[in-house]
Every structure is written in structure tokens, then in C-alpha cells.
Image (cartoon, rainbow, N blue to C red; front, side, top):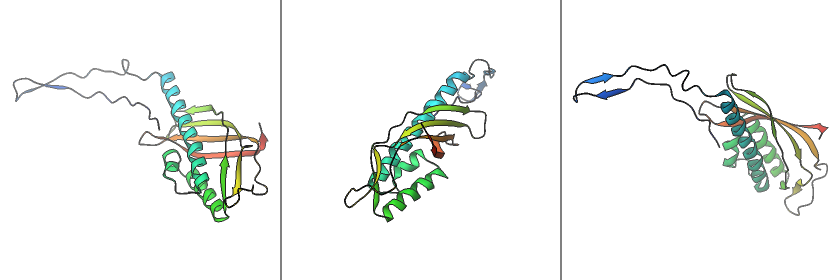
Length: 179
């Protein structure tokens, strides 16, 4: 997953004089010289959030295909409460002899960026096309009744965690809103 570049705070630099003496160089006020351009920071956040979202969809497809609710790739892109919801959904399908198969189409866009929020967040909107992504019985690959796909609005939030990772921690498919 992509991480945002962080500019380190300026620290006083020291240089050796005669081996035992240290000369402290004055610190330069670097606020104006090294301030991150807000547009650059915003674009980096958007990219990192969209990468996390794409990773979330891919990891969910892979875990669903294998019927593996503990697939390690899920936690690379997801955080709670969404991580637990996805794991429970995969586990529930597995317990009922079902699995996900097929192709999920996605074309997400960023709808809001809140870098000043604590923690920083990016909101994402997508029109998920699940017409080719089915819940089927694992034994014979017959579609599970009532599990047909469609095109529906989906929203998600990516949150920047203290370690710098952007993870998707909430998401909803709005089945009442076709797109």
C-alpha cells in the first residue's frame, strides 16, 4: 500500500570541530521553504486512498473465491469495523457452502478529502457492477437464489492511520440506488 511522504522536522545539525568540540549550527526556520504544497498532499492522499480501495476490492474477491475469512491480504487494506464485516460475510458464505466467483467491475472517484481531520480521511464513491460477480454453491457452482448482482452506488472511507497507512474502514453498498 502506498504511504504518504512525510517531511521530517528540521533538527539542529552539528559538525565536529577538533574531534571533541561540537559546533552547533543555527536552525533555519524552514516553514516557508519546506511546507508541503496542499495540492500535492491532497493528490497523494487521493492516490493512496484509491489504491487502498482497489486493494480492498481485490483482496475481498480473492478471499471470497477461496472462502478464506482470515486471508492476510484483507488486513493489508481494511480496518475495523469494515474488516470484521467482510470477514463475517465470507465466513457466513463458507458455512452455508457458498463462495464468491466472477468479476467485479469498479470505477471509483474521490468525493471528499479531509486532511485536517484527526485522523485524515478520504471519501470514495463507486458504481460497483456485480452483474458478473456471483455467490454460488461451492459444490456445483449453481447460483445461490436471491444473490443476483447489479449496478449499485457504493461509498467507502479511507482513513490514514498513525503508521501512515491508508486503510478502508467503512463502506456501504446502497442497493436502493442503482447507477
